[in-house]
Length: 282
Image 1: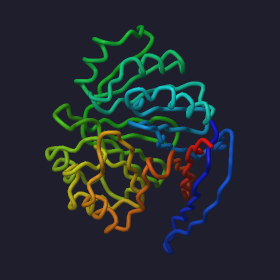
Image 2: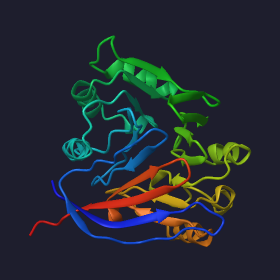
Image 3: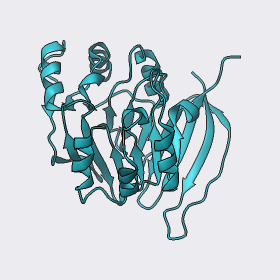
């Protein structure tokens, strides 16, 4: 699979703001050359569904979700492109993301050791998976904090099993903060609005395909993200009001449908954003 780099945006996190540049280049594989005190987060541009890859400098790889229906082959090609041979953990954020066949195949192909999810999803996984005792499955509750690998920690801000609820968490890497939001219920939003730790967000993963009423203007203004990521869905279109609300905060919005796979590479002081889109067949 060949990849076309559509844009490279370099963000210099200084008081003067950020600068950007653009390049176009054909590549056969992607090597981020992560060094100590660096990490990368990639939002894969699948035809449907969500997958986020978290990479550390010492070969640490964590997968958040495994994509939508019939996207496993796409995912495996992208993992090969990024030279991923092992995945230590999978984080499944919602019960309706549980594509059991894909999870089993990822576990088998990439030697996964741990799965983390909500309490309801834990029950479903234990009852439906064909995995052995070598894979640990655990539920994460709100307030859980853990170090994923050196310099990177996770904090679960909300863990719900109601309608339109799941795991909402921040990734904290040195002075950088990412918020991966997966709940879109009013209950979840009210709880999150009262969380004093939900500030200074660099990267915001938008929940529920930005469908109507997924998030409020008040919430968007509260987190005030620098960059917002929206995954593609076969069945849903983003609400124009939500897009406008994000633009009103001067958030840069990146769509996997438009931009393809989106990689954010972090160093101690800065971060770079790369977008990679599959070339169209000639």
